[in-house]
Image: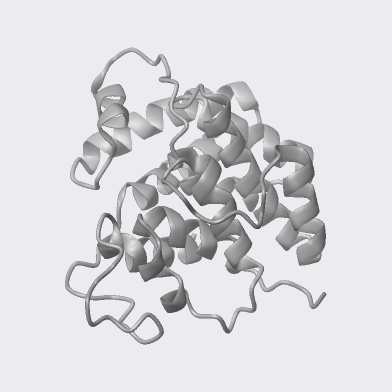
Length: 229
């Protein structure tokens, strides 16, 4: 959670403003005038609440996430939610919309820390995505990030994690970031965490089209040191 929040706050001012003249990509303050938490942080806390309520049951998790997402969004209405998510949060109906945006991956980090098997982790990650994301890409993004966090926790090598993500989810880990779709930004951010921890977040944040999703996903997985290959 701490890593995710740092990534969210450090990257927030680069959202929609990736190229800032005069900014040294290797030496800039992580926290500046426009630094703030965003919807990614708010909804990550909502996932934490849902996890504590659901006791490992996927159906209860989905119901709890739906309720908590709406509750937290209304409590923090200025956090920067996407238009469709905000419309969903303000609607009394719980029906998901077919989004393949990266929000489900940005809020899933608590799931990666909460279970002792990969199967449980991926199942609960799916449940956390379903309230607002019925599109397969949105669900896949949440499951793959949670799986990466789980595998890092269990001491798996970078190559093992990469191979699982590519095999299970079909992501090209070497693909360049081309757009904001989850199928592009999530695997690229995940590939970044495979670099040594000495490679600073500062090197990454200004080079992406959207600050919080990219740096947030990177810092989620970097919170645990990888074993040496």
